[in-house]
Length: 202
Image (cartoon, rainbow, N blue to C red; front, side, top):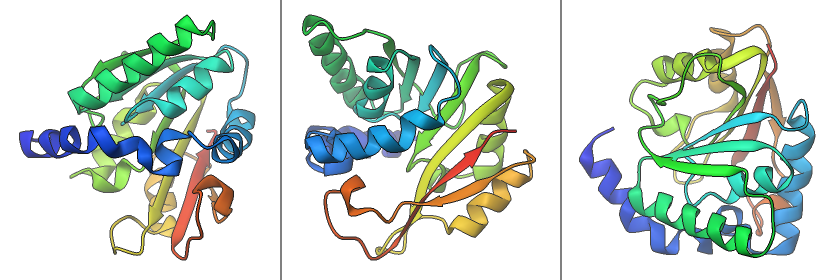
């Protein structure tokens, strides 16, 4: 990813958590994401890579549930915000199982077969070579490995349709299930576009 992309997301960092699904500051929204994501993690204490983690809200949600999470984001300011959240959580006595690193989500600096779960939310659609990035992500998984992609085709016209995203995953994996995310509790508002999760377990 180029410098312009990094600078754009650096500029978004200060206000990023104002979106209900980004900051998870509303208890109802936070609970909705907990109920969605946590049952999909295959075992206690899983190693999770959260690629394009933003300010780390989902990373910390998973860490507080006992998983070990590595959050990666291109934006240094997003990573700073995530680390500040992690430090605040530690002071509050919450589990500190998340670490954050600045880097390119399309080329994660992690060893092959080093993760039980790869999670990416609203990241894949924005990458210049989605197929190559997805291949790298899948190589991070140890067998059987769980891939969780939260994506959408938003009202702005940006994004990726669920059928196309599923087909991309099936080029690398045997299983890919589309889970619609139409529940307004996840977003803190009414939605009229396509939002979904791709779940791939093998």
